[in-house]
Length: 343
Ligand code: NAD
Ligand code: UDP
Ligand code: UDP
Image (cartoon, rainbow, N blue to C red; front, top):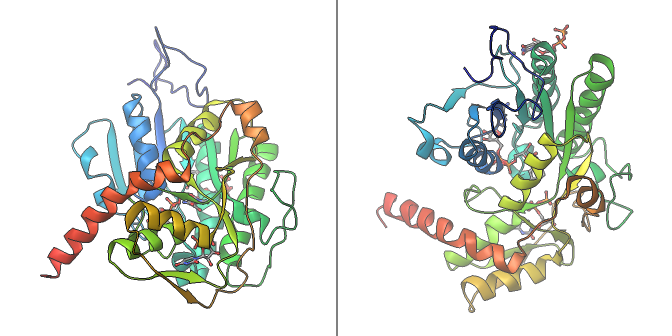
């Protein structure tokens, strides 16, 4: 087994990226929690393609087997139905910890479960990392900056977060997860990595997950008005999923703990986003205003100088290039859904 050093049966966990076998890098055994979800499934594809052995842990709350079905039967791939709130014993080299609903609609659905996933789930994965000497990467979020009073946001900004609001299960949950990661690092010597991910889009997002890009794209395809919340002047910065996956792997394999902002600095108001979707999908698409949700951040844009300098990473795909790349996948799934309904 590639994860074991030659001549002994002792695993060499924790020597991530530094123990070449022959030519090139040593094959690793990698856990991806939340690997059946949108970002996780793209990350799994990249890890499998480069020759790693991948174990996915997922409870299928928002993830789908469909996202991974092309890997079923691949001996380098294993899918375990598991809730990270419960402990688990595995022998691995790296842990990418993504398990957590990411859409506000999903994470507000059962806020207590969301915070348990962020706190107990992260604790279990750090306990696992400590026991086997694995390197641990947390997918934190730009939401740790809350409704930011600094623009663009740098990693040094401590944020402006409501601790008792509807979004707190997620924002404060991720802030606690970051704290846990740093405490396991300082207290137990666990090698940790922290990514603060900004809004990301691409194929395999849930059709009706309530996030703005998936909503607008699905609405435009279905010939429904795009629902703009509030006055539509709030901003977000949208990153295509392959750029994010490249950043996560660069962070995991590099020598820097972070936190690192991983996002595309291209900033758009929701009204501008609706225009880009209109140009991309249907010039006759319309918009409809709806009341905004509580505590919605007014603006968000990453400062990515730190990731550029230390990870040699920056996004390559602009919104206008990336949006068309998700439209085929969305059209196909909407068609399947309509056929399923006998439409
Ligand atoms: P997603 O909802 O598509 O994927 C999350 C996955 O985690 C799903 O497969 C879900 O079933 C699984 N999951 C949830 N709770 C679990 C539990 N208790 N045990 C096991 N599995 C569980 O979301 P995504 O967009 O792929 O996000 C992945 C990660 O990236 C999340 O941690 C999210 O907070 C973070 N993130 C994403 C974005 C983004 O824009 N996509 C932005 C910031 C941070
Ligand atoms: N844990 C786990 N898998 C392991 C090791 C630990 O799920 O391989 C869980 C363990 O059940 C505990 C958490 O991780 O709930 C934290 O573990 P740690 O050893 O750090 O703390 P302790 O068990 O001493 O509280
Ligand atoms: N939004 C919108 N229409 C929608 C869904 C969301 O105008 O159908 C807005 C929402 O109010 C927020 C922004 O789009 O200002 C981004 O929301 P999303 O849920 O995608 O992610 P967030 O950045 O809030 O986590």
